[in-house]
Amino acid sequence: MDIGLLIDNTDVPADGDGQFERRSPVSGKIATKAAAAGKQDVDAAVKAAAKAFPAWSSMGPGLRRKILNDCADALEARTADFITLGQEETGGTAPWYGFNVMLAAGMLREAASMTTQIKGEIIPSNKPGTLSMGYRQPVGVLVGMAPWNAPIILGVRCFAMPLACGNTLVMKASEKCPGLHRLIGDCMVEGGLPKGVLNIITHSAKAAPDVVNALIDHPLTRRINFTGSTRVGRIIAERAAKHLKPCLLELGGKAPCIVLEDADIDAAVKGAAFGAFMNQGQICMSTEKIIVVEEIADAFCAAFVEKAESLKTGNPDEQVHLASVVDRDTIDHVAKLIDDATSKGAQVLAGGSPKKGTIMPATIVADVTPKMDIYAAESFGPITTIIRARDEDHAVDIANDTEYGLSSAVFTQNIQRGLEIAKRLQTGIAHINGPTVGDEAQMPFGGTKASGYGRFGGTAAIDEFTELRWITIEDPDQHYPI
Image 1 (cartoon, rainbow, N blue to C red):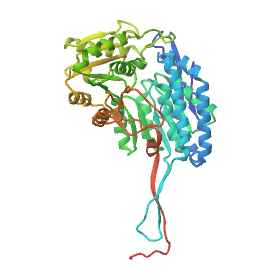
Image 2: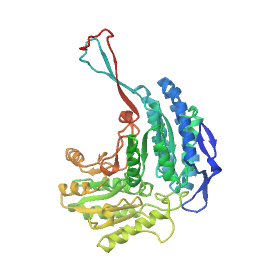
Image 3: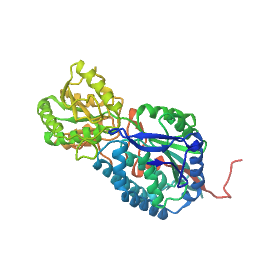
Image 4: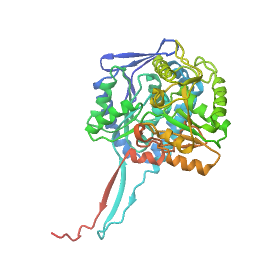
């Protein structure tokens, strides 16, 4: 599959006709040959978005709503194509990519519904005869940078609300799923999105720093949203700060799941397994720290191991719970964490890292302590840890003992107790009797600490993608002191 850049709704080659290859993590065969963008391509994409901005930003909300809804329909119509290409490019299961399309289409429809909800306010003024308004308006050309792990969800999320708010956008695709991210663009064109409103550029891994810098530095780009690692997020934030460009950053995580002594163990096991192993643990909200109160730790561990060992692994085109991770580097990273942990006293209760290949079973490492690398490091693979806590307060301390703060969970049959604990957890998201992994288009999604800042989703996203201005209408004959 050969793909070009999407600029002005047209498939165009990169400057100099450069290309790069994305290979299947399972077969090693070429999945996609994609255009390798450089600085000149960034400039062309940004200028196309700038040219489209006046018409798109002044378009009535009803028409913008219709177009975004039509785009959602077009996305869903290509579900089979997304599944096939997703299995080839990133190695996940068919249900995962099907779910990606479903939620991404929901995000477009939610964004469409928000076009009439971008509201300001009348603010009482102390000056007689003055009408004072807080007025929201589109910002201009925005930049969206999407990752590979939930490629359709996070690809669409980077532009859905920005477009609903009247902005135009340049989307930087991930070099690990260039075909999937370009396919999103094709769907938007099929749905009727006007020329230049959404432009998509692909690039090689080697060119990533130059492309990112060019997008941030371009004088016509106004704001940046990025979903990805904390390491890269810091670089983006620092670069953007030089230009005083606001960022929305959704970064890494080390999501804790607390299981209290009064929890329904069966419910906790199911929630923890889903949170830890869905999409091979390659989700920013994946459950990486299961903190169990000592009183029920043995019973929980026994049930959790049984659950993990029941999860089937295999190739992406098979009926399995866990398929391939995105590349062998993920397996090597996890293997190092396991080796370090076991050398310091931890036990592997289930699974383990394979000697070769990219398919790894659900893995549980127990008796983890702060002296082990896996206690703090984000694993981003099909592995989770179990840490024993003395009591509720100790469990909360362990949960908060991390630089990250994206998602969290607590299992207890005392809802009031669960709510009080949720308030104490230093995360942007907290679930009571539910898994750490969850997303809905209308929710304020984002983290704290090293998991980033800002919120995607619903009314919270309006603030991220509009300018709030103070505008007055005054008495021309008002009195002046001088």
